[in-house]
Image (cartoon, rainbow, N blue to C red):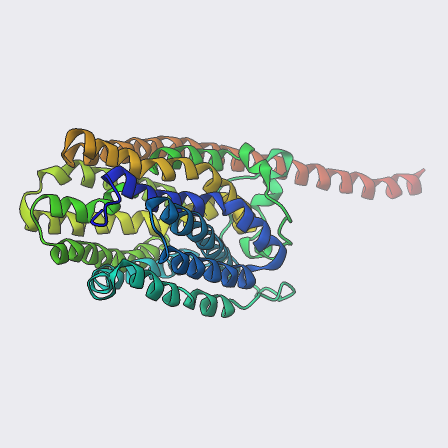
Amino acid sequence: MEAGAGLSCEIAWVSSVMLASMYAGGPISSIFVNRYGSRPVVMLGGVLVSAAMVLASFGTNIIHLYLCVGVIGGFGLAFNLQPSLTIIGTYFHVKRPVANGLAMTGSPVVLFTLAPLNQLLFDSFGWRGSFLILGSIVLNCCVAGSLMRPVNKQAQLKPNQDLQTCNGPPKGETAAAEDTIPESVKAQRPAPKFVDLSLFRHRGFLIYLIGNVVMFFGFFAPVVFMAPYAKHLGTDEYSAAFLLSIFALVDMFIRPITGFVGNSKWIRPRIQYFFSFAVLYNGVCHLLCPLASGYKGLVVYAVFFGLAFGMVSALLFEVLMDLVGAHRFSSAVGLVTIVECAPVLLGPPISGALVDIYGDYKYMYYACGVLMVVPGIFFFIMHYYNYKKLDEERRQRLAVEIKDSEEAVQLKMSKDDEPVNETDA
């Protein structure tokens, strides 16, 4: 903006295009992961993100940033995000929520240090030099990818291992058999080479997808406009950037805590309710944000928003894996991200347009709050219905199994009686 790029909505398009490209690249990343594994895909993503930052340093207008940071960088992030999530489901089964929570902690750790670092780099080297330095930093993604060791698919399972079964049945007559198979066995099945479109007939997957489409219209905008909102209220640049560090610090600690809570025996069987509460709590924070006065009020908001954002982020992909199972997770993420790329793309620019039209940020926070509260309530209602249907289906399967067992016993007894009758005759 200081370089003459334009209005808030135009600047917001940079992050929106990047996030939308990251989500749109989900199906491509799914195919590559199913075909080649996580390690080479993550390393390719690191090269793409680094190239995007370096090319952005030579930009002359905002369109150049859209193409480099937005499109190229977004696709590179897609090749980093999904393989990292998929391999968690391959490595962990019993304590997967904890593993997801710890893995998702990396994002706020970087944000906590990157917010003031970006301001320092900008003041010292300008925005062009900052992009060059960031391009070298993100090459560490290649190092991280090289550490993702492929799992031996022929490894034998330990007996009496405490395993969890996936929440939602797949489809049709195979639902009963699928729900009785341990998740670790499912994870060792060969993944489909392409995206599994049968997930659009999966009840739990559709609930997750519909709610998330609405939620993502208001999910990222409050983070994007937190520092500009503080500047609008008269806060200096470093104090405004420090709000993001406070937000990231709280986010960093709440994600692993959320993972531990989600893995408890009281929460994990009904973890979808936990996620519903996190989404609803997020929306309430945004609705109350305009009531915060001064910098201290923004600090309080950053703390509570960090709690809410961290809870949603830690559970976002765990609940999807809980619904569809680890063996279908790669395809599920690809389908979810391609559908969600539209709200991710349009959310921040629409919020920026509200700021430009009304000249005040409170309407943007009200809109984002409503867009989070509505899906939170939707998740509570629909997951109650889903859990109820799952319990009914399990009871029906149990009744069928008991009936089949009784018929098998009767048939065996009748066959045993036949030789006796023939001897008497």
